[in-house]
Image (spheres, helix red, strand yellow):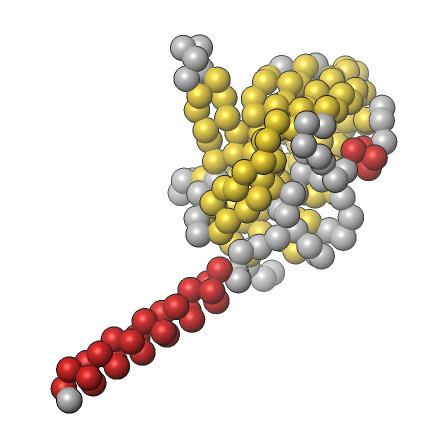
Length: 198
């Protein structure tokens, strides 16, 4: 009889544990409605993302509590403006960005932007994207579908990398860089949660 009671207690504990796990998984944020959430990389880097009803997303990157970068993005992929340590830039696309979404496999995008910078300086940039695959990625215990996007950007800044874009978050959640020796480095967020109520 004693063995049966111990077995029943163990089974009951397992049932309670299994029921508790889906409740935790439900706390994974998505960019629907007027929400904000925080993604972290390490203990020092925190980015708060503000999603609205439409395609525009705002983000604020803080490092050790200091605001480093504020951006406004279209669908989390195209910068519309940025405030980088006091230097402001406004980017105006020469194409209708809404026609590019939702993104599809093997889709190729080429968009030019006019850039107005602090001090009245004008510049141009070009963003070329190719959707090269789909996968899933975990941020902490939260699992998200992602699109792998080869990004080539020239103009005020020059870089090439692979973005891991999570449409449900309207956010690039990781970047893959090719090193000079041919190896690749993946830099990703390791924690996500709903922003505390203000």
